[in-house]
Image 1 (cartoon, rainbow, N blue to C red):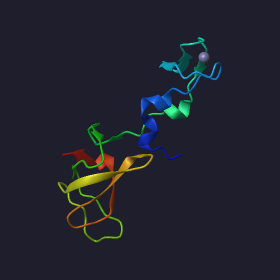
Image 2 (cartoon, helix red, strand yellow):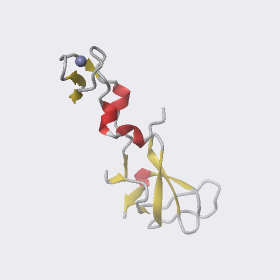
Image 3 (cartoon, rainbow, N blue to C red):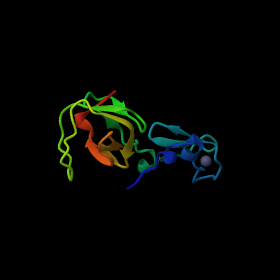
Length: 123
Ligand SMILES: [Zn+2]
């Protein structure tokens, strides 16, 4: 399942019309949607409020697209004879959809890297 971040806002999209009376004067109360007009309560669709994948570096710091990271140990690069050296800086990383363990980025020498986040530290 591919979630796009734009699914998570605007907030208005999270409060659909009341299935009982049809008015959209509804609000979220915990895991429930509540209609202020007729008092009807119903469960929110779980998938719609699923948290976005959070990508974290080796220290547990969240990473975002565009961040700069540093490689914390020498890594072999598949398809390349050049190892990725500890201390290599990767600028402008990209996140992988639905994958919290890898990011994509380019080093100065190697383009199109896919790196495990446990070997990276936010710069
Ligand atoms: Zn209602």
